[in-house]
Length: 264
Image 1 (cartoon, rainbow, N blue to C red):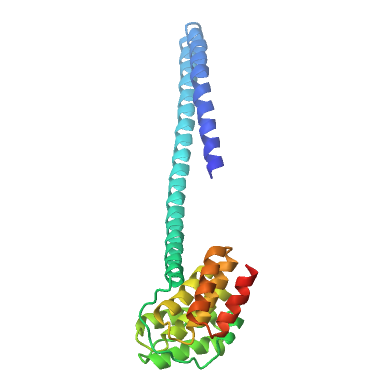
Image 2 (image 1 turned 120 degrees about the horizontal axis):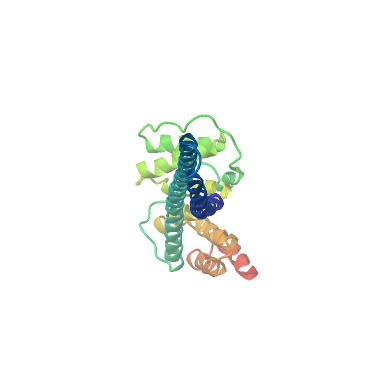
């Protein structure tokens, strides 16, 4: 786009630059010949000069119109790119605020831990390549029923995108449910399997920050450290692994964190 725009400007400059001397030269040459010959010849010559100038003016106007269209298109593209960039920056900012609060050991509100009916390892089989044509199930108004329906999309129907939509709606509608840590953990795992590590870390961090007493908290915190390590942020990965060992010293996640630390 920018390349075409520069070519338009160059051609316009050349056209304007050549038009003036050529136009003046042609006008002088033609006018000098207008003085001789019959009246009809003079009129014909003047008409030819006028038509040439009108054609040149039309070409210049068309060039200016094309250039303005390119400028408007570029302006719109720049505005769209700026909006998307601001969204990415804001998401990154939220994520690192979550990670920093975990590394410093700060915890938010705690809820009683509800054990999930399925193991967390089953979520590891989720991937973005699975196709699903049906929409997420409508919410019934009962937290347990809607949660089980969302989990069924993962374990039974393999409809992972619909499961993400259903779980995101669920965590907003039922903030006081004891299944909140499980739902957020599922979201973290599903986003991780789709390769969206920032979103994944955000939900895992939510489990640790808001539901530190949940059985999912130690695993979630460890996975935050894994994501930071995969993003080559060694400093934050070390801080999170150290926090796993400190906050959950007797857990399997602490043993895994210790191994990860040894390799950093």
